[in-house]
Length: 94
Image 1 (cartoon, rainbow, N blue to C red):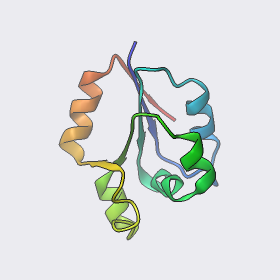
Image 2: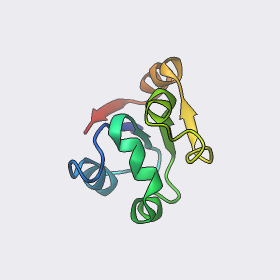
Image 3: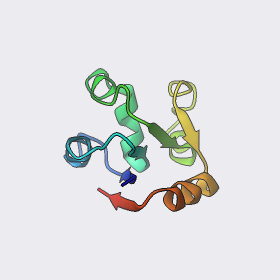
């Protein structure tokens, strides 16, 4: 079963990302949105997410002024977010 793990809070705000990574399956996708996009700047979390299907909400990256720092990651818009929700069997918002 393909699951889209939608994380909205930064690792310093909650343990949502850590929990999602424990339940992440081989066909799953990890979407960082809101303050969670800042996790992509932190070496510990970069290492923890290495090899995962990872994407970031572009609007949230832009809103935080992180566009140039996070160019190496796939960034999606709202239409692509909707497409991801339809392509997965389940969406879990952490």
